[in-house]
Length: 365
Ligand SMILES: *[C@@H]1O[C@H](CO)[C@@H](O)[C@H](O)[C@H]1NC(C)=O
Ligand SMILES: *[C@@H]1O[C@H](CO)[C@@H](O)[C@H](O)[C@H]1NC(C)=O
Ligand SMILES: *[C@@H]1O[C@H](CO)[C@@H](O)[C@H](O)[C@H]1NC(C)=O
Image 1 (cartoon, rainbow, N blue to C red):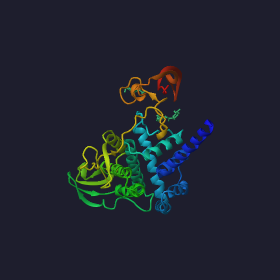
Image 2 (cartoon, rainbow, N blue to C red):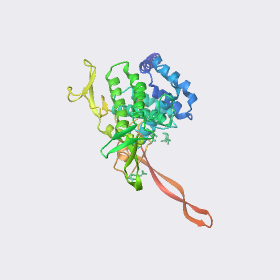
Image 3 (cartoon, protein in one colour):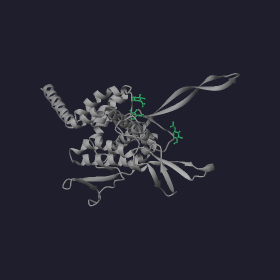
Image 4 (cartoon, protein in one colour):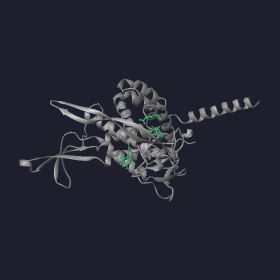
C-alpha cells in the first residue's frame, strides 16, 4: 500500500516538474551556450542555433536564417558576456556557476536564473545584452557583416572642448550594435508585460547604455613638428573588461522595484511614485545566499570551493564557506628553481618541491 502511494506521489511530482519545466521555456541564450562552450564554435553550427531559437518564435527564426553571420556574432557576444560574468564573480558565492567541464550544471542553473527576478538575474541580462552590442559592433568595424560597417555619422568636421577636429578612420557603429541587441534580447520579453519581463528589458537597456557611456574618443595629432594643429579622431568602445567592471558596480548597488499591475510598470519599492533610474540595475525579489546546494535553482552551493585563508573579502574562508568551516589540504607543487644560464643559449633549472596549503569549503554535514 505504502509502496503504491509512494509511486503515485513520485508520478505526481514528476508531472508537476514536467509542468513547471514546460511553463518556462529556456531562453535562447541558455540553449545556445552548450554549443558555444563544448564545441569549437563554428559558423556551420548556425542551422542548429536557428532551430533552437525557432522554438520560441518564428520571427526570431526568420531573422536568424536571414542574417546567419549576424547570428554567429550575437551568440558569440552572449558567450563573451558569460565569460566576463565568471571573471567578475570569481571570488563570490554566486559565480555564474561558470565551469566548462560541467556545462549541464551551468546551463541548468542559468536557465533557472532567467526565470527569476533577483539581482543576479539583473546582472546576467545586462552583461548578455552588452556582450551582444560589443560583439556586433566589433563585427561591423571589422567588415565581417554586410549589414553594417563603421559609423557613417562620424565623418567630416566636428568640435569638442579642445577644439576642432576631423572624424577619420573607422568609428565603431555602437548604435547599430545596440539596435541588434534590442531586437534579439528585448523582443524575447516583449510578448508579455509581467514584472519579470519589464525587469529584464530594463536591465538589457542598462547593459547597452554602459557600452555607450563608456565609449572612448581616440585622437591623433598632425601638424608641423608635433604641434597638434590638426586632429583626426574616431570613436571606440571601451575594453569589455571595463564594461564588466561598471556593471559589477551597478550590481553592488541595485534598485529594488515592485511591479505595478495597473500601470503595467515598475516602481520603486519604497516609493511607488518613483520610476527606477535608467542608470541602475533593478530587481524584484531578494536573492538567497547560494551557500548550500539548492535544487530549486540548480545551484550546487559553495561546498568544495577553494577559499582564501588570509583574505578578508568575499573569497575569505568564513564568507565563501558561509561559516560552515573549511578543510585544509597540504599539496606539493613542483616548480623550477636554481636556474642557471649556459652559454649560449640554454637555461637549466632544478625542480624544487614546495608544500602549499589549499583551503576548501566543507560541504554541509
Ligand atoms: C569544475 O567543477 C569541478 C567539480 O566541482 C572541479 O573539480 C573543477 O575544478 C571545476 N573547474 C573549474 C574551472 O572551476
Ligand atoms: C563556481 O561555483 C560553482 C559552485 O559553487 C563551482 O562548482 C565552480 O567550480 C565555481 N567556478 C569557478 C571557476 O570557481
Ligand atoms: C588571498 O588573499 C590575499 C589578501 O587579499 C592575497 O594577497 C592573496 O594573493 C590571496 N591568495 C590567493 C591564493 O588568491
